Image 1 (tube, rainbow, N blue to C red):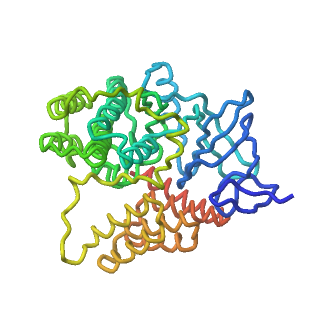
Image 2 (cartoon, helix red, strand yellow; image 1 turned 30 degrees about the vertical axis):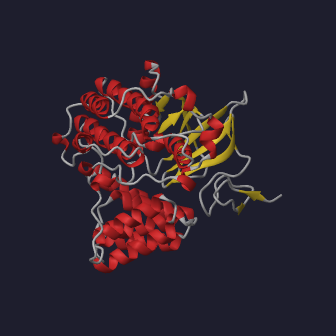
Amino acid sequence: MQATCLGNPPHPMDPTEVLCRQCGALRAGFALGSYQVQSLLGMRPGCQAYAAKDQTGRTVVLKLFSSHRVPLHSWSVAENIAWQIRKWQHPAIHPILNSTQWTPDRSASIFYYVSIHDYVPGNLLHLLAFYARQQKQQFVNQQMLVSMLFPLLHQIGQALSFAHEQGVWHGAPMPTNILTDGKGQGKLADFGFARLIPPTSPYLPPEWGQGGPRSAEEAILSDQYIFALLCAQVLVDFCKLHDPMLRMMLQKGFHRQPEQRYPTVQHFLQELDGQLRRGTPSQSGVSFSQMSPSMSQIWQWSPSRSLSLDTPSMERKAPQAASPTHRELMIEGNKLYRQGRFEEAIKRYQQALKLDPRNATLWTSIGDASFALELYAEAIHAYDQALMYAPRDRDIWMNKGAALEAMGRKSDANKCYQQAQLLEENE
């Protein structure tokens, strides 16, 4: 009987294997322990997410982290944080259900850390896509949008603030980690585990450079950077609030210099609340429960079809008649990448390379887009070019290893993973 994987699109695969050699996704119908895997939710180098059913029929999310990508110490820290947070029972924090380790087969040199969570089908991007449709049909106006979306942002900010008071940082409070139940309650997911895979542009804090935060204090300010940037995207770009004072306070929240930001997320929230009260009427004439969509409605409007969040417009440069710079081309490529338009993104990156051929970030971006298109040979070539100019970049070695592994070249992949580990140990 022909077996297929859960990749997008699915591929025929060897029925005796668990992971597809072509794309790395699990085999359709596979049972991971007591969980029957149903579908692939998302995949990045080093991390995969699946919807699965447990023995009671409940739908859960399984997140698999490659042991080559995530060191044991980092996993142990993340796991301990996740279990610590579960005890808090905070209404705006999505807790872990369980965690374990899994090895595809006894001869495999790689194993996976697995985190298990309740399944919530809607996130902030789905919610915004739904409201974008409502706005297009003139069912909601600016005032309604603010009155419905700001409480959700406030809940997430309070969750961050509470965690920070306990000395815990998140690492990626961005749209895909903000879940919504369709009843006005937001939940911040992946505490502990989000820090294992750095956030992507535009949410990567500038102070992180080629690595992660250097201290818990810096990480807490980095959380504020990501959250403030998200608030700007929602309130300025989506809700079209253009009050100059609001823009100034948002820009302070995601200032490039950490010491120039607010002392805490709580200070940021208080200032944001004050600005909105001064600049926006407090009574919208509609309650969240009246306008809040059902989960089926949220899920219907896929963000890939309806919406893309980009760097806030207040950070973008005005159009110029002159030829675009390599940085502008790279930003445009990043936008196309986030929209899933990988071939167009590669073209922009290649245009940028003509202006700056020794830019390791551009070569890495081409590699990542090629990986997403499952053009693994092209991805490996791009990563090799990037390593010529940034040979000590651990992430490039890891990404090259993931591409080699996807091609079935496990021995070569292991060498890349080992090199990345050496670089991390020598930092």
